[in-house]
Amino acid sequence: MANSSSITHFLLLPFPGTRQLQLLHFCLFLAIYLAALLGNGLIITTIAWDHHLHTPMYFFLLNLALFDLGAISTTVPKSMDNSLRDIRDISYTGCVLEFFFFIFLMSAEYFLLSTMSYDRYIAICRPLHYETLLGSSVCLHLAAAAWAMGFLTALLHTANTFSLPLCQGNVVDQFFCEIPQILKLSCSTSYLRELWVIVLSACLFFVCFVLIVVSYVQIFRAVLRIPSQQGRHKAFATCLPHLAVVSLFISTGFFAYLKPSSFSSPSLDLGVSVLYSVVPPAVNPLIYSLRNQELKAALSKWITGCFQKQ
Image (cartoon, rainbow, N blue to C red; front, side):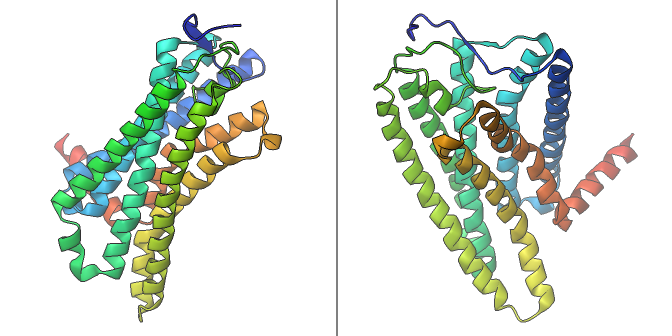
């Protein structure tokens, strides 16, 4: 029986199979990681470069890209390194940091997505008051609130989880350090203390979920009242990317943490964790760029300008 004070490292879940399959996992994760770096990096650079995109919607999108870059950089590089070197260990400090930053960035992203739904609600339902209700100082405060709430959530979970006595060894049944898997290592009754923190976080996340739903109910009611088809199409074009990102984020995250224990298995947990932690950061830039003509035009202009300078 191990004790948390004596644990110096954890053993992460290795991707099963032969050496060739491990290298295939490395290549697959590398491709996804490079796609996330490229997509989010282009969004950040384009929005920062083009002053026409210095609006609340793109300011929040820039923050979303930062969260996505940070989240995928927290877990994927270590997993790739383990697969390449055919090892599975992570230091105790490394596990704590990975645990903290992943919760920090994913929680902050969820709070930011709630803010972005409010931004779309104001833009469509109250367009005449958009600049008044979402001025630069308001946007800064809303973004700062998302960062702060994510930080406090991560700090609370990390301090509470790693203060528990870990009596069930050091084997983490996941490719990164996450809450459910660390709790499985705690003593039989000590994990109940962390459950109260999880319930508190779940209540807060539920409030944000309700705000998102209410915002989009009002948005769709307003859009359907627009007389022209072109106006409805333009309004939907600004909302559907955000709604797609929210749906992907919430559905995969909720299933990962709220699925019945009877559905749990190492392979299923692994697949679901990849879906909610690895896929969204790589897919979000694609979702936003497909239907956003302003962003595509600005990106094309920026790339053209870079080639002309050369």
